[in-house]
Image (tube, rainbow, N blue to C red; front, side, top):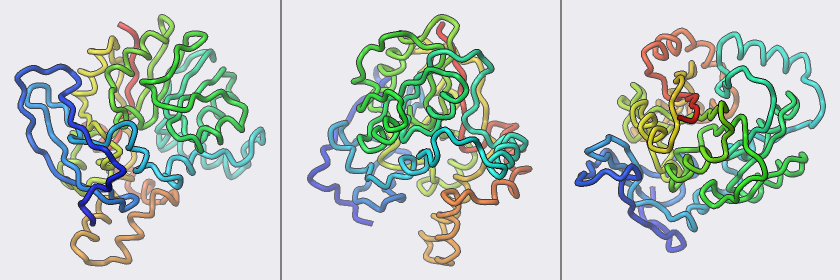
Length: 321
């Protein structure tokens, strides 16, 4: 691990975005980029007043792209292989199994198709899926390359951050963001903007890692979902509620996802840190990218932990206040 941050990366320190006055930041842990092994060591702190955890100091918005290389996982995993082709029998079977085991991490309310915005749409897989369901879809994506993949499918995608995105031509019935909010430099401002763009009665659906989960507490800085320095904020159920409320949203439901991918990778990280069972550890780290079968084996455990809100990922449904 190279702890020296490269010169092309500018760093900044920002206070708690919830405006907590007279708060003292408490150090939680230090970590580094475990996914791409890019240089730098980063500190995660907790606001003593509201409990929100954040990476501080952090790369600036202009330089954090260094930690999003072109082979960044979500850019590749969200590519649509065959536009307009119906699902194969195997694909339908896989979809049925995922529904049966409730592995569908992109869960939205039942509603009639309308206008949908996806923030952090990557290469457009979910845009394409929802367009096939009759939705008029639009995306926002930070990566030029990933956005071009989505645009090549025929969908309008703004390249840039949510914070810098222009006002839309129309308002939305549905806005989604899958594991995106924790990446934003100014999530409160972004959520307020999205609130202005939402039609009355519309739904905001987001997913974020659960930094208050058992996984997070057990693995500490080796927890996969820390994803430093890309994850600038680290939410618990309480702090995500607080942030959404501050931005004008009311939480309807929080679903704790029945999947333990983060746990599997985290075990691999711990083994690698200890320098033992390296071959097996690397297999654990690579498992989620290969659609591992351990999710099915661990399903009973995931159900039990989800019942108590202790899995590593959560999906939140919210509406305008």
